[in-house]
Length: 105
Image (cartoon, rainbow, N blue to C red):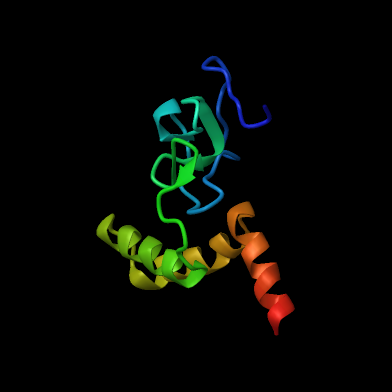
Protein backbone atom coordinates (compact mmCIF):
# COMPACT_ATOMS: atom_id res chain seq x y z
CA UNK A 1 0.00 0.00 0.00
CA UNK A 2 2.97 2.37 0.36
CA UNK A 3 2.99 2.99 -3.39
CA UNK A 4 -0.62 4.14 -3.53
CA UNK A 5 -1.37 7.82 -3.92
CA UNK A 6 -4.72 9.57 -3.78
CA UNK A 7 -5.69 11.91 -6.58
CA UNK A 8 -5.99 14.73 -4.08
CA UNK A 9 -2.45 14.28 -2.76
CA UNK A 10 -0.12 17.03 -3.88
CA UNK A 11 3.02 15.90 -5.62
CA UNK A 12 6.35 17.43 -4.75
CA UNK A 13 9.79 17.78 -6.23
CA UNK A 14 10.70 14.61 -4.37
CA UNK A 15 8.58 12.67 -6.84
CA UNK A 16 11.14 11.53 -9.35
CA UNK A 17 11.16 8.19 -11.09
CA UNK A 18 13.42 5.82 -9.20
CA UNK A 19 14.56 4.25 -12.47
CA UNK A 20 15.16 7.15 -14.89
CA UNK A 21 15.03 10.27 -12.69
CA UNK A 22 12.15 11.92 -14.53
CA UNK A 23 10.24 14.44 -12.40
CA UNK A 24 6.66 13.29 -11.87
CA UNK A 25 4.45 16.33 -11.43
CA UNK A 26 1.13 15.17 -12.88
CA UNK A 27 -0.85 12.02 -12.15
CA UNK A 28 -0.33 10.94 -15.76
CA UNK A 29 3.45 10.92 -15.18
CA UNK A 30 3.26 8.05 -12.69
CA UNK A 31 3.51 4.38 -13.62
CA UNK A 32 0.80 1.86 -12.84
CA UNK A 33 0.67 -1.32 -10.82
CA UNK A 34 -0.84 -4.55 -12.08
CA UNK A 35 -4.25 -3.63 -10.66
CA UNK A 36 -4.21 -0.26 -12.46
CA UNK A 37 -3.43 1.79 -9.36
CA UNK A 38 -0.81 4.53 -9.41
CA UNK A 39 2.77 3.56 -8.57
CA UNK A 40 4.55 6.50 -6.95
CA UNK A 41 8.10 5.18 -7.38
CA UNK A 42 8.30 4.87 -11.16
CA UNK A 43 7.14 6.92 -14.16
CA UNK A 44 4.85 5.68 -16.91
CA UNK A 45 7.81 5.41 -19.30
CA UNK A 46 9.58 2.91 -17.03
CA UNK A 47 6.75 1.03 -15.32
CA UNK A 48 3.37 -0.06 -16.71
CA UNK A 49 0.84 -2.53 -15.34
CA UNK A 50 3.24 -3.76 -12.66
CA UNK A 51 6.21 -4.41 -14.92
CA UNK A 52 9.27 -2.52 -16.07
CA UNK A 53 9.09 -1.49 -19.72
CA UNK A 54 12.83 -2.00 -20.19
CA UNK A 55 13.40 -5.06 -18.02
CA UNK A 56 16.97 -6.28 -18.16
CA UNK A 57 18.50 -2.95 -19.16
CA UNK A 58 21.81 -2.17 -17.49
CA UNK A 59 22.55 1.06 -15.65
CA UNK A 60 25.01 2.06 -18.40
CA UNK A 61 22.36 1.44 -21.08
CA UNK A 62 19.79 3.44 -19.11
CA UNK A 63 22.21 6.34 -18.73
CA UNK A 64 22.97 6.30 -22.46
CA UNK A 65 19.24 6.30 -23.23
CA UNK A 66 18.61 9.21 -20.84
CA UNK A 67 21.47 11.20 -22.36
CA UNK A 68 20.02 10.79 -25.87
CA UNK A 69 16.56 11.88 -24.67
CA UNK A 70 17.98 14.91 -22.86
CA UNK A 71 19.92 15.92 -25.98
CA UNK A 72 16.72 15.73 -28.06
CA UNK A 73 15.12 18.05 -25.51
CA UNK A 74 17.91 20.60 -26.01
CA UNK A 75 20.39 19.76 -23.25
CA UNK A 76 24.07 19.58 -24.13
CA UNK A 77 25.63 16.12 -24.17
CA UNK A 78 28.10 17.12 -21.44
CA UNK A 79 25.36 18.39 -19.12
CA UNK A 80 23.10 15.41 -19.85
CA UNK A 81 25.94 12.98 -19.20
CA UNK A 82 26.87 14.64 -15.92
CA UNK A 83 23.24 14.67 -14.79
CA UNK A 84 22.71 10.99 -15.68
CA UNK A 85 25.93 9.83 -14.02
CA UNK A 86 25.27 11.85 -10.87
CA UNK A 87 21.60 10.93 -10.55
CA UNK A 88 20.78 7.43 -11.79
CA UNK A 89 23.18 5.37 -9.65
CA UNK A 90 21.66 6.96 -6.51
CA UNK A 91 18.06 6.09 -7.39
CA UNK A 92 16.34 3.20 -5.55
CA UNK A 93 15.84 1.31 -8.79
CA UNK A 94 19.60 1.05 -9.33
CA UNK A 95 21.04 0.82 -5.81
CA UNK A 96 20.36 -2.91 -5.56
CA UNK A 97 22.06 -3.69 -8.88
CA UNK A 98 25.04 -1.50 -7.92
CA UNK A 99 25.50 -3.44 -4.67
CA UNK A 100 25.33 -6.75 -6.53
CA UNK A 101 28.05 -5.60 -8.93
CA UNK A 102 30.28 -4.52 -6.03
CA UNK A 103 29.86 -7.91 -4.35
CA UNK A 104 30.99 -9.69 -7.54
CA UNK A 105 34.29 -7.75 -7.63
